Amino acid sequence: MPLETRPIKNGFAHELLGLRLWEPLDDSTTDKLRELWARHPVLVVRRQALSERELADFSALFGPLERVVRTEWASPAVPEVGLISNLKDGQAQPIGGLGDGELQWHSDQSYMMHPATGAALYALELPPKGGTTSWLDLAAAYAGLPDRLKQLVEGRNGVFSYVKRLAGYQGVDRVISSEAKRNTPPVLHPLVHTHPVTGINVLYLDSTTTIRIAGMDDASGCALLDEIYSFATRPEFVYRHEWQVGDVVMWDNGATMHRREPFDPTARRLMKRTTIFLSRESHIVPDGCLASEEAMA
Ligand code: SIN
Image (cartoon, rainbow, N blue to C red; front, side, top):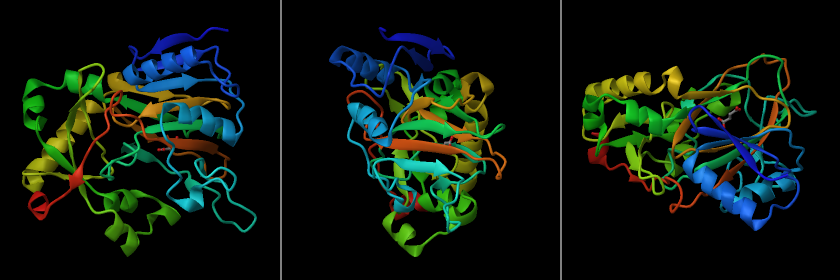
């Protein structure tokens, strides 16, 4: 069956029909998927039945895969596949990460100088209610910003901190080791990037890691960020995905933020994910630097 696509939310997301991701894709389909992902940051493929190897092989068509950094979340069989789950093993230890709580609007790895910006999440077990994931279109949000906010944010760098991310996690993930602080110091990224393929300006934001705007005092920087978040997170910029078992959703963290709604801790949710180093030629990949003392002052 040839590849068909169905735009969702004005083309911000696309559903892909006719794909069997457990089989090798031909070159022309792969090229079409790469072009689609460059222009449409969220791609949805339903009704898949994938082994971890098949999920990893499909993801690797779009760039090198990152081995799961939090090794306690990694699949024992395929180290590039991470488990996102509230399930526990026979010793009552979590089998994966991120539990059952709410995850606020964020962009994965924004606290890294060179983030791996692609992600694919595959649903295996789902709670009867809650646990839905939403993506925010940061190109549409930028386009809709009032000119005053565009001028205020243009040319500005945000300071992104891993420690802030960890402090927001619940339960076991909340432990902030001095090693994490030492290895992942705050970094600077521009708050607006131009997309290499579409030429469109896109906001780069993460409400769970941004601690200030470089060159602005704390109060004015936080007030500006709050104003931008409250504008950018309007429902018209959001695609809310109601998961079904077998769904694969791929997203580009260079052009989106995402959030997850909490779910009943006694229900089961098991997702598998990969993380992909997308190319700078086709995607926004922030190229940050360490936040200097001046930026933090
Ligand atoms: C994530 O933020 O990467 C996980 C999203 C989810 O569990 O739906």
